[in-house]
Image 1 (spheres, rainbow, N blue to C red):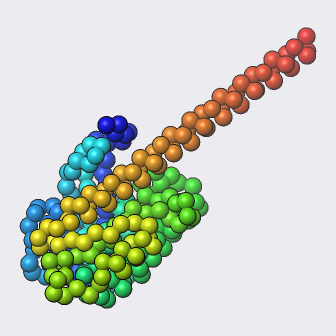
Image 2 (image 1 turned 180 degrees about the horizontal axis):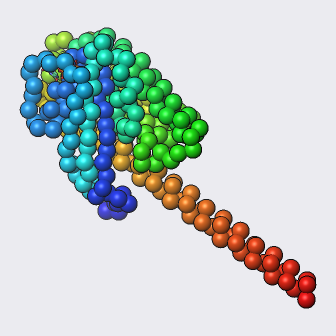
Image 3 (image 1 turned 30 degrees about the horizontal axis):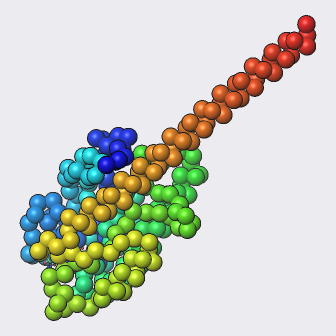
Amino acid sequence: MNMQRHPSAALQLHRIVMVGAGGVGKSALTVKYISGDFVQEYDPTKADSYQKRVVLDDGPCTVDILDTAGQEEYAAIRDNYYRRRDGFLLVFSLCERDSFLEMDQLRRQIMRVLDEDVIDFGSNGASNINGGNALSIGTNGAVDIPMVLIGNKSDLADMYRQVSVEEAQELALSWNTMYIETSAKTGQGVEEAYTELLRLVNRRKLRESLANRQKLQAKAMAIKDAQAAAAAAKKDKACCLM
Ligand SMILES: Nc1nc2c(ncn2[C@@H]2O[C@H](COP(=O)(O)OP(=O)(O)OP(=O)(O)O)[C@@H](O)[C@H]2O)c(=O)[nH]1
Ligand SMILES: [Mg+2]
């Protein structure tokens, strides 16, 4: 199989964020993914951070997960969570329609914050290759951000479902991303959700690093051409004087 290896695969750190309303299961999903355990009790989060070594298709990497607060009282500090992050898991509960209806708004907030960073990037002229958000403009002109839509608590969906698969898929499609149903209790879809997001992040970084390399090569060629032209002009001048 012809697999493309990331130029610095061994050093990859992928920084992702859990986003969604209070009580939808962001912490429970994160703990399930990190340790395999299910946290039964509800202890609202302010902000927690976890790290795990994982092996993706092209080698090992470290995933850093920022688990944010869904509770409304923390809404004002969310902007800072989204900065300098590579990917986003947007989580709602299949048993709570309001948490689904909040998704589009939360996505807009992420886009707004990352857009501001693009504007900052333009005005101060600094590079965002390593330090900034994983941002680029997609073919449709929208900012292309690695993101996956998650419908959690699938173990309760038979009894309490308030959001259909079709409407969740439709929303994900309108974001140009994928939709996955999970259960932090049974583990259904959990590994897949994180792995799919990490793949999107990885692909994005690979594309960016190739584009940067091409830009550097083009710059080097332009300098070489300019130097050759200057040398030729100097030679012509010397000939004329003789
Ligand atoms: N049955 C079931 N319960 C779940 C699932 N995921 C989370 N829960 C429960 O839902 C409650 C809230 O889960 P949390 O993970 O703390 O929710 P959160 O999104 O982190 O909430 P905030 O930190 O306030 O934003 C807890 O009692 C969990 O045990 C799931 O997939 N199935
Ligand atoms: Mg939490």
